[in-house]
Image (cartoon, rainbow, N blue to C red; front, side, top):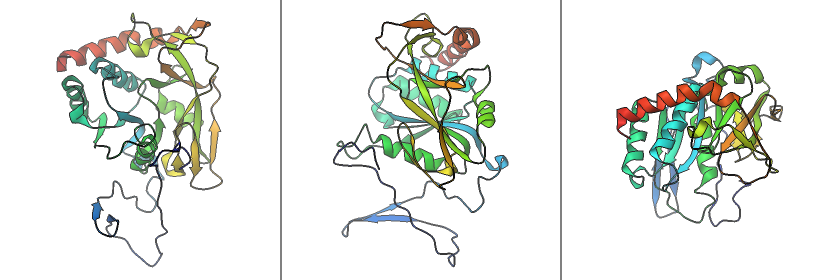
Length: 290
């Protein structure tokens, strides 16, 4: 893939055409170096014609998050992140982590949301170190293929990011309005939101002007062959479109400290979500004793 950044190990996609005369009833994958063999259980098998109708999808909208490690995000923060996405219509969040290495309270939060089926936690240990950003490309594309035939829309973002439509609508309705049978993906521009401890993290409301034009993507997974960190690398059919979404439709809020001289308020966020978000976070915290 194009974003391996010169590391010793990188991500790649292996694919092969299935001969038409072969009828597949089950499948398996094996890797070997000539001496050792590793059998892999397929993550998801898509039958012909699956994913063509909204009635076939288990979820209308899911999101994919990068590898969770260390102590960057507290249990309180994870609760706020999940509850904010639920308010916007997200039906499932897929994340990757080595769960036993997280602190006990964060593990407790993950277990709670797994039981609710809002979190899909892929628990694995990364076998190598010299790979870009905790194997971010592997995680992104694994999550892409997990969601083919399973979710109508999928977005790829970081733990401190959320897609915010400019109109007061849920994200599923918004995506249905902007996508069609020809559009595979949209790049959404990033807006940096300065942290204010008086609000829950995802209800902060002061934008920091940024000279950087970072983007993240939302897409229809069955139309995409390879997904990059900031753009769709390759669509499955050449006539599918990968477009940039105008910022007057939606932006990606990134809740992080960003130093710049010019800031201005975005007043709609606290008005639309703060009370409900705070109440929901408090209820969950009491349930799991955070």
